[in-house]
Length: 534
Image (cartoon, rainbow, N blue to C red):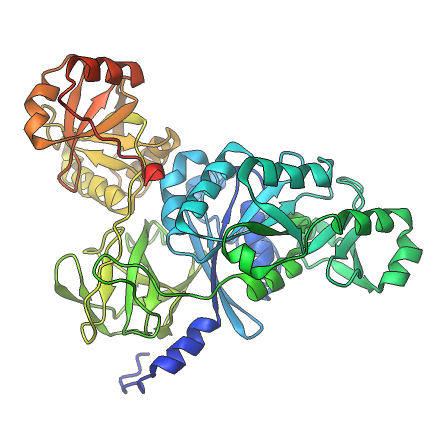
């Protein structure tokens, strides 16, 4: 039921206090490091769910609350981002789980624009992997501080000091331990608290469905009970500097923790570290003013649009990160891109696939706006009672895979066009229109080929408009100035296509093709468009 009575206005101080309670974080990792498992373990320790795997799992722990899309469950990977909000003590955590697969880097990049801190999840046996490195680079460029959690310490893995050296040598982050493993990887006997030398030992629960039972040991008791492995852990942990929040926020150090997410070991300490160290929402840079302070009137931006959450309805949800002020359900805001008013009657909080009406939200929170068909990724909305604001546009990654899409059943052409537009709006794929092919045969552009699989799956099962994809022999896209279109378009092996924002792109076979064109046309610049270069 909707409460029609007006809510009392909150002053800037009250909004600032609410913002200070918020922590907005994302989990980043290479595929198969255990990211979705950690996401669910965090929710379990915060008592947001009763049992791990209880929402979608079978056989104790076969599924996670954050992986809800049917194709995700079939493939066993995360390919969409999921928003989970839950209370932990007196704080509110907004946890954004991100796609682990490299083919979905764009979605992860968008999520990282909406958080204030990231948890970098490492596999104890593998350390830093390519996708982890790429996502860390995005965090560094955006000034997002990183907490490191080394997962799967209950399995055979690398030496702990080797992992620490790798962090410092490869990405320039000095690890500062919060917890330290007692026993080598695969022979895990507990966790040492670096700050007071106490130790915790654990007893796993069947299937990791519940929080692991633990015993807290004072330093003397730990030394007596655990013996040499405790002494080694103590000595190793004290070879490194203690945690320093200032250097962490500056991106010079990374607080480091160890555990086993599947067994729910070390997860509570990670939650405590997030509360103690991660920054609350702060002033947000904008294109229209120096920054938007958290206590100014409401503003936010769309970082994700997701459809298919409810198979019974073809609704879609726009995820909005609140940047300033207080959001109230039903308030009429201004859509910055169009200048038009936008009603927020259907506002939801999101917990994986579960949704509840959200009456209010504060900086750092994520609001789900239902059937906000006029909103697209990157759009800004704001309270018209305050100064107008526009947050920076959401850059796109340079696509490397291209395919022409056509509808298999000509009688479904209308559904085809509508569905392709929605997939583009959500950011599932980029859609390019070639003048020679027309909008009936759009070119789908993707960072990785798995995006095509998702597009095909959804076109058939969600929109009932199965498609045929004919792969093109291009692997590069470059932006073309309008004055150069005729020359570039007439070059051998290059196809010109238009992006939704009006930009013209040249599609080329490979880097050698590009260099050959540049040598022959030194007066023409083909502009790179990778978000990783911003």
